[in-house]
Image 1 (tube, rainbow, N blue to C red):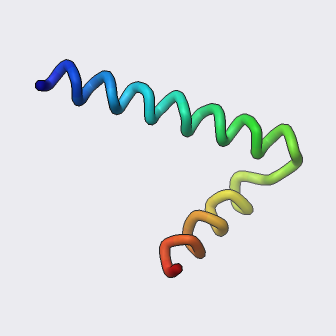
Image 2 (spheres, rainbow, N blue to C red):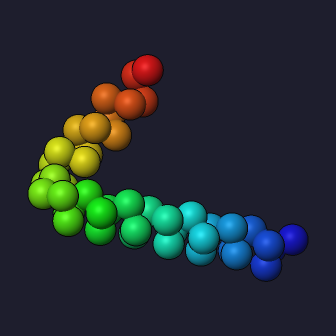
Length: 43
């Protein structure tokens, strides 16, 4: 079970890294990404 959980977390981590790299490529700052995520929590 632990191996499966680790595998899932590693996949999620890779997806987050990819999303953040794409945000950087289109010119978003880390602050803009942070604000977007914070605002998304309230929806």
